[in-house]
Image 1 (spheres, one colour):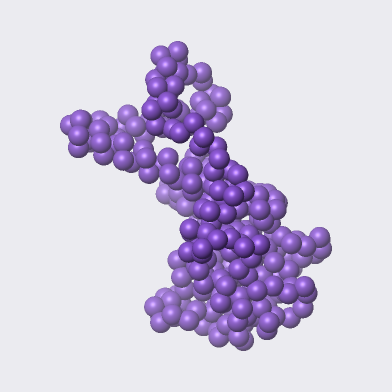
Image 2 (cartoon, one colour):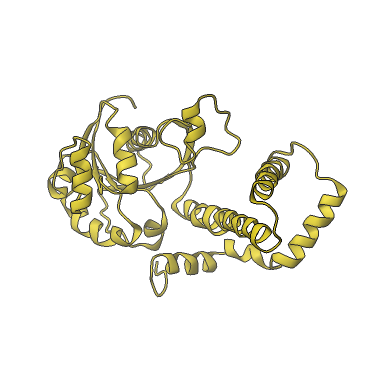
Length: 284
């Protein structure tokens, strides 16, 4: 899908909205930038972008990107989806609201979700800009995981072209179901991976502040061994030593609950998303 399309970015002056807009501005697509907050409108003005009212932008767009916080997706979609032309693609950036059924839907409107994977820890980087881009969307290539509620090949092609533009540079778009995307984000990457990242930081602080290890020494050994641990576990680069395996078993038995894999169960996913969306329960 290489032909230019029209895209409306709702929330174009927010954190993710600005990232998305920065990339779309480099393309041949027609882009309408919508932003309600004064701070976001000022940011758009500083970037030289004209702000279009959401109600005007969405009726002109082939794809409407809802780059707004999860908690706002319900009321925003309620206000805008009824205005869309039949066949419009509505694209959100996280699966939580779609999975929870918070979006206003229409049978003649296509709904999709696309979440960036961020540049892999194993990505081969070549330039200072690629090394500096840990989040993605600037210089370092990344994959994207997406879901679309349509079997229309043309709509999928339009959606993929939009995804590749807004998250550029993109290596590949991996298509899954909305539920599978929700199982990946938050369960796999936030509930587990980000939690482990925060635990590593707490462990570093403990080594420095409680054990009295000089910070440069503690940070150096942790960062190096974190790379080795990930490479050995996820890529099979080298086997862990027998002594290391004993220490790993000790850590697992003292830190990890035996039933930790329950976070992948549907009812636990619903509890997690309900808490994230400030809902009493997920009702689908």
